[in-house]
Image 1 (cartoon, rainbow, N blue to C red):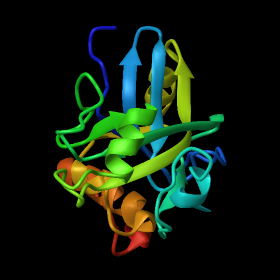
Image 2: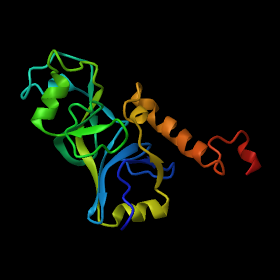
Image 3: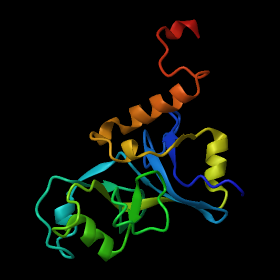
Image 4: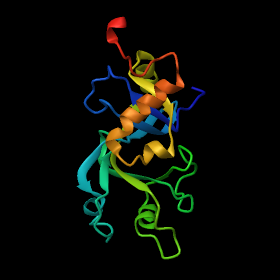
Length: 188
């Protein structure tokens, strides 16, 4: 495989009925001949970040939700953030989006020093989505997923419940041959 899809968003096709991925947008964090991993951007849980990390860090209470990143290793935590000063990954999967999985990165983003920017945007994910070699390619060929470039605005969309509709509209706007909304379905 020569073209990595790292940094692309997988937008679930309306026909995809898998309960883990129904109406989801997945940012691919890694993609190679060995497989792919990513996180679901639009599945906030009822657990707050401060509660989930209470045993590891003493962070102030907040309403920030932990997102369900996918069905694989649901107790593993990964964070996406927008601080290029913290960085914490070799390269960002999308412009202005960085991956953090270490205790140091969590601490630097969630508990910034006085001299560090406290307006860092972040999302914490429990678990991730994973595909074995060639599995994702097969799902894309079958039409389960639409591809769209990952972006800071999709990752940090204010209302995570809008991410799917926003991404779907962007996909269809980018391919003007595919109408996003049909005004009169009887014309089909």
